[in-house]
Image (tube, rainbow, N blue to C red; front, side, top):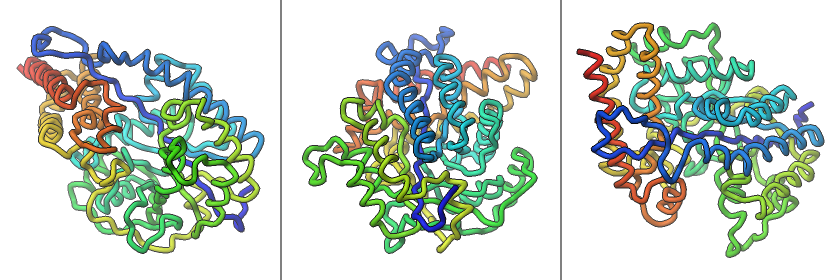
Length: 424
């Protein structure tokens, strides 16, 4: 039972793995080579298995134990691509999450199926991917997502209103650079009327019986999140080592109604290995804080709190890199060209799909186009320097962003030719 007198703690974790691209040279064009086998250095199945053993499985089991012992609750979002790979490569991992959900202390959020940037480019495909993801979550977990987490916490007034019209009760966003505003209260999105085209898309694609009164917004407390995600192993940090009782005291003393700690699931076991003490830390955090703080899911938070202010975000923001904007994916000409080119063929792809009707190639063609939209492919092309550059290198399977770009464009050229052949 939630305690209205206690400050609320909302722990949200993101699960996503793209299908990494095959090594694809110009000589592979027209060769019928598979696009998504992963590179010689990064095999998709091997990578998923490794992270499962280090992170997904041990953390899922620990979360279940913490829920049983201390009653703590969690919110998780999973891209459709992550669920697909769990079904294919590690059904034991998926079963561990199904067990968590059935216990009742975990909420699954809505998002785009392909972890794409469609919300900033194609509202039609954005809506279709959200609908796909909702159906997948319902089929696997028997849950209907009520709160939305856009790819990389990408948010703007326009996107928020589109999400609201799709029928979601709440949405997550980044709480960085708010001026005098605090991330530790509940907000409501700035409401305005969508244009006629966007409304037609929602009416056509995303049918919901209900629509909430307003869209409530939870903002990530980036400082407290990064204390775990980035500074936990930093021996030069003045607060090193971070202990659970120390962190609990920070949470207790923070001003506001709610503390939103949002991070990648892989923080536990993959980015921060077991020998760093990260699993022991999160267990002890639940042990020390469960009677001092009210651990809630995002849906519980937006039901139990009243919005205190309106959040007004004109320029699109995200949780990525120091800028917290779209530059992680669209910061240079290579990224921009690749991004424009994949969406430039949207109508051609959909025309080809209509031509194919109910053949097996219809689903495969659309699936291929959408897998190529995954934000990761553009992230690997980043040419940033300093700490952000190191993070991009850490995640990238390529020797350089230029090789990532060339590989992607070779595949895109091959895909274009396939579409042209089908349309003839």
